[in-house]
Image (tube, rainbow, N blue to C red; front, top):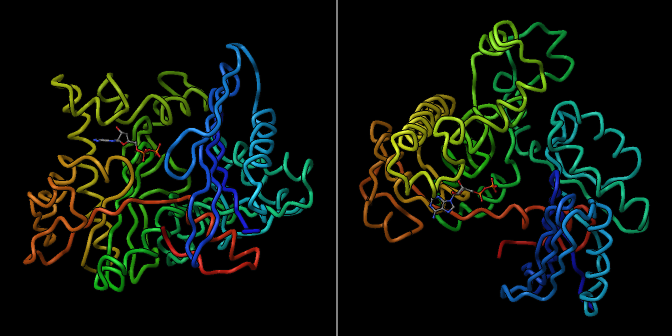
Length: 400
Ligand code: ADP
């Protein structure tokens, strides 16, 4: 009977899951899917490794299935589906591991209590990430669970990169630049040698451009700086988040518009970014297809800020050898990639327009001093690998 690992990524009204088994030292997907609209009109779908639907269920509109109900459905599905596999553990995506968790960790009651202390640092994500861990601890206490953090990868950054210029007593409360998207960056760092030995051992900036967007400066595959800070609202503009903002704007919103913390939270997380600037959509595909000048303005601002951050991160690295595009926009938007590369010509990037249009992995010319790459990310594999390592099983989970 083969071992299998389940990976869970839980959000506020949905979760994604996948089930990985291992063959010849490589993980492969046995099943993957999601449960969504858990409090309005719940829907569960699971597909096999080839993408064929193997289980699907919809509940009546108005059914409040919730995370627990959906988790029960998932466990029942896994039991049915797992006839040939033994579930050896569940790996969870957890957004915040604070400064304490520099590595993934097996979760028991005391670890869970420690992770709950980080809820104020990531109130929109952390509670939802932790909820299924608590439920499974209660219902299946023998099932090993591992928390894998979006912050861990960045703990290699020098102290100066993690600090705000605030009084020590505030810093000591944990008000630091943590950085996020670490599970994605770790995946890219791990596969980068397969694409370019020079990029893997050199100074590389990875651009994770999805609904959430950030950039990470890596020296020999280790994070030295990133655009996200204390929360995942910092750095680049995103689908609905504003990215970096003069703190004076927050004071202005409070004083002049009488906005409280919750109203400002909604503004900066849900109403800003590509959506806020365009007034049309948070979706890059919609904006690229639009001829509305507001859509153009939103894309212009996104590209401009990426260019500024490239310069800043190159300074943190003391030079640049390679850039890597990943996540939904980075992997798919040829136009945005070409534009970012052209804007970075001064840094030594020379884009190969045809290779970029073809969708090649390498999109820079052979003469380009800085090479440019497109590499699909895979956070789930990082979680499966970390979970397998922590559980002490065969630690040879490469990449699929
Ligand atoms: P998340 O952060 O939710 O995981 P993704 O990595 O899936 O997000 O990225 C979603 C973004 O990728 C959306 O803005 C979407 O419009 C964009 N995207 C996906 N496919 C394309 C495409 N073909 N061209 C341009 N943008 C795309």
